[in-house]
Image (tube, rainbow, N blue to C red):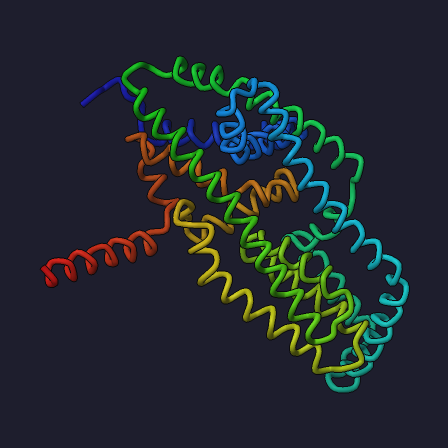
Length: 369
């Protein structure tokens, strides 16, 4: 037994202090850190593209520039499409607000008549509920359409950072190997390889999943005859990226818009049912198969991570929470002292199911032989 080792409560206090300081650092420096983080994710996504271009003896700088320009082209198309849809939607906002106000007054009168709750009491309840929704994440809808200048500045920084990260990627890799001792080189290589594979699969899978959800919802809304069908389908698909909270927020928003633009009460029911069915299909079939098994984080940690990320740095923190936790799990699983934390982050049920499936396959193979 090492007598010089400090007591457990001292070690725990040091770790909690370090976590607190990291949180303060992220909160205060998120304007600098968030563009760098997005650049790293985009660079990993573009790495196969730049490697493919370099095979044709294209200089590294030009190959990296072409890859970044290709990404900017697709991003510009998406932004243009969303801007045109939002512009069309914004022109009818006064009419939507008017219809929503009429429904709100009718609902107030019904509640007063049936439940004997005065208008003042209803207003107090709604004000309290609105503050709770804002604190729990509902306020992020407004953030999506705000701070245009900040968004453009972030896009420019992400473009520059991505190009430079791709250009100096081998130099950065040598630095990471030099930071750690030689005997840890294999673990460092494993962490880098698995993190790169996880981020690439996660990002590509997320884009494919979002495209499928947007297409299906838009087609359903067009079939029902909902106004702004394409905008609502794409908007719901984007919010669906946010685990658990996003689809609920999208459903509420879509139902409210349908309520103010449709004369058929059945349309509201069909919208709610279709979004629920698409979400169930996405959660149980699309997400596990398209995004893949690289991100295996349990639901509790996912929700806590999303809430913490949103509280620290807003909307960006919600999107970055899941890949961040997944990378931390990869690191924790390869450090003996941190393996219990990796086990806490992981999805034990999913791992057990995977092991059982493998065991059944082996049993079937042995029976066949």
